[in-house]
Length: 155
Ligand SMILES: [Ca+2]
Ligand SMILES: [Ca+2]
Image 1 (cartoon, rainbow, N blue to C red):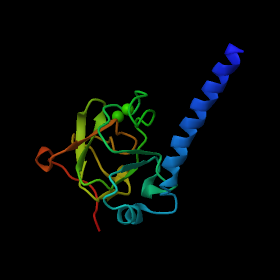
Image 2 (tube, helix red, strand yellow):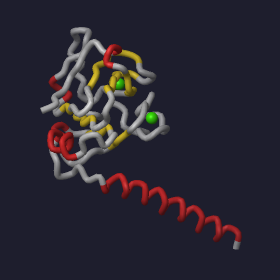
Image 3 (tube, helix red, strand yellow):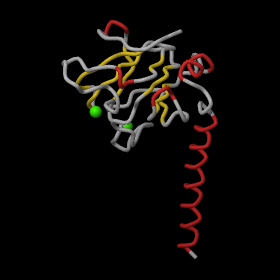
Image 4 (spheres, protein in one colour):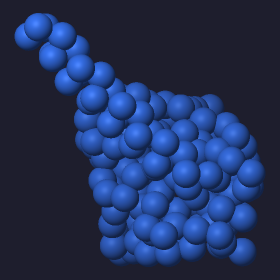
C-alpha cells in the first residue's frame, strides 16, 4: 500500500513537470521567425534559445536570469551546452554569452529586444575557425559598459 502511494506521488510530480513543459510550450514561438518573435514578445522578459538557425522550430530553451552552465542540470538551462544557433532577447537587459561555463572564455553581448539568426556566421575573438555556432555554455545579464563586442539585430 505504501509503495502504491509513493508511485502515485511520483506520477504526480511527473504530471507537474510535464505541466511546466506545457506552459513553456504555450509561449509558442514555433510559427515565428527571430524577428517576429522579438516583436511579438517584446519586453516579455525571456531569453529564447534555439538549436536551429533562424529561430526555426520554436525555442528549445528560455531563461529570465543568469545560467552559469548550460549542461549542469541546474537552473532553467540544464542540457543545452554547445547547442545554441539562434537567439531572441525579449528582456530589457543586455545579455553576455560565453563559450565556456562560469562566464569564461570568449564572449559577446546581445542588446534588449535584439535577435541573432545565425550564430555560425560569427567568428570568435581569437582569429581561429571556431564559430559561435554550437559554442555557448553560459550567459549572464550585464550592464552595457561590461560589453566590448555586440552581435545581433533590432529591426
Ligand atoms: Ca544550467
Ligand atoms: Ca562551449
